[in-house]
Image (cartoon, rainbow, N blue to C red; front, side):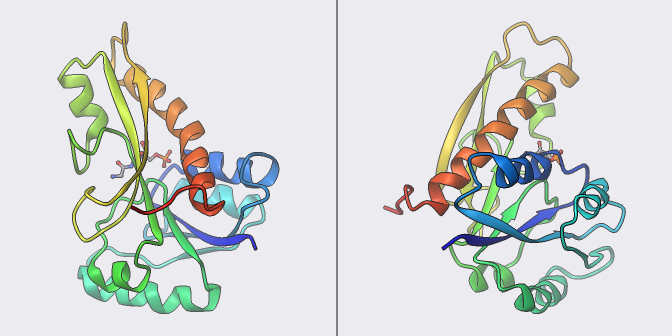
Amino acid sequence: MKKRIAIFISGRGSNMVAILDNIERGKLKEVCEAALIFSNNPEAKGLEIARERGYKTGCIPSKGKQREEFDRQVVEYLKSFSPDYIVLAGFMRILSPVIIREYSNRIINIHPADTDQFQGVGAYEWTFNNKLEETKITVHFVDEGVDTGPVIGKRKVDLRGAKTLHEVEERGLAVEHDFYSEALYDVFSGRYKFN
Ligand code: GAR
């Protein structure tokens, strides 16, 4: 059975696009379908792209809302879509236990750094400012900490010779776009096993 996923975005949505491409004609074709593209930001560019591509989209603005209040609304909203997994793809809001417990071990995130080295927002800036010659992209399950959940996989990014933040981000994103779908495949196909 294909897993039903809800992809959560807050902005541009380039990881979402890579996942949708892989669902339509790549490595995710046999293992999942996108039931919903969801955002906390009505202005998210990615929502428009998803809509144009014919996907069901939904938005609950989070601005000015308390974390738990917003998460309760999201849990309620998701019910009619019955997703097996929530896939965070540039979703820039910390989730509370209200949603994490409802979807325990079924929320997956991509983090643009090694989660053992850097947690939270601004990972590429941190990487650039520290002049790293190599970084790692992490795909992990979301637990109640910030970027602390069980790691599904990490993938290296070669940054030698990268001179600007833009270049660091560009190289990182190229890896993210490939690697996220590979890691998702491992989970949805049953290849990834919890210890
Ligand atoms: C990506 O680099 C993603 O890893 C990062 O935000 C960017 C979203 O880009 N996520 C986080 O930093 C989560 N804490 P996108 O909207 O083009 O996919």
